[in-house]
Length: 411
Image 1 (spheres, helix red, strand yellow):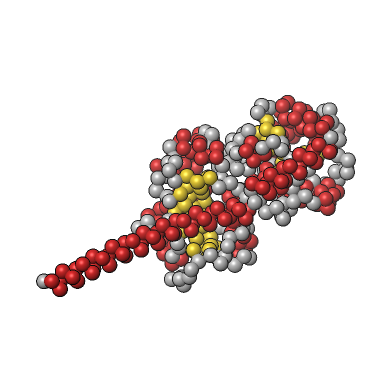
Image 2 (spheres, helix red, strand yellow):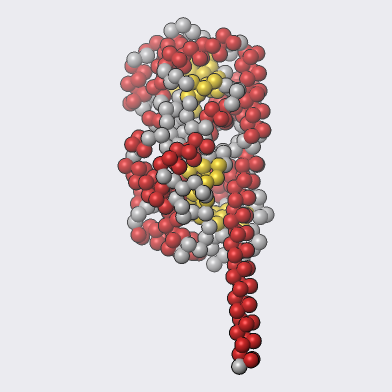
């Protein structure tokens, strides 16, 4: 049993702590939580995937249940219920479909005693593009979507698409991703260091993308466009960073067999921890996702580093970029290659101005301090409603008790 304090006790239940969009955003919110008013705890349905230690370094407890692949197992749900009963949270915050469902199922077993918030962090263009397990989770989530206290979406387009699919709208909230602009910031030293480490000439124009290997990221579009541009611009280099972005990836091997001339100027770095430095090495960032994006973290990170973006029209990417970059309405290799060529020809001064505007846009609209505050305001509102309700019920009970005493005296 936890010690009762004035802090609001928030338990976050997430599918995995892997360094992807959801795991990254959870970490940022935790790192910027007002600890004098909120006490966070994290439950990962998977193992820690290397993310638990970063969170624990902030003095935040993390519990890893190793149950991500067996969510419907009664034994695993019982473990989660027992842990929640021990933690006694004021609020339960789910993350991603499976984490959301786990939060709601466990709370149901606890007689719905806690406010539950869901967090949905992807768009929903076509459910048939998802795995069978994910389709099951999405359909069940739609049926249960009226039950949580609130559903937090990180993108307007994601909220609209989920509503079209049948998710309830009365409890929807939009809170975009936030960025630490002290971590993601222009850095000339990082730019020089990364370029030197990859043997990229100082005068080269560098285009890059940071994205783990997945069909939705559409690396094929990037590589096909790079091959087209490389035929006419030999001083352009391309950096691709992310999990499984290596020459050992057989699917990438097959793609590169079609573009042998490109390989001299192509740098596959794999997964990296120095993402701010990688982004600073670029002259333009590109996102080629074909579906699935809600709010793209990496687009905001690049912009915060003063690197303007060219991106496909997915999720809330057009809203994030605004008028500081270019949205690719025609997601074809030739259209992307032409957009890159236009930015090369526009000159360094114009690109620097675009980058500065991009950086200011992130600072103005997507500060992590502001975003973390929005989460905290939701939690405070939910707990205040419960306390008000409990006070009212107690007042009614006291009136009935007093009335009974009076009646007994009259008798």
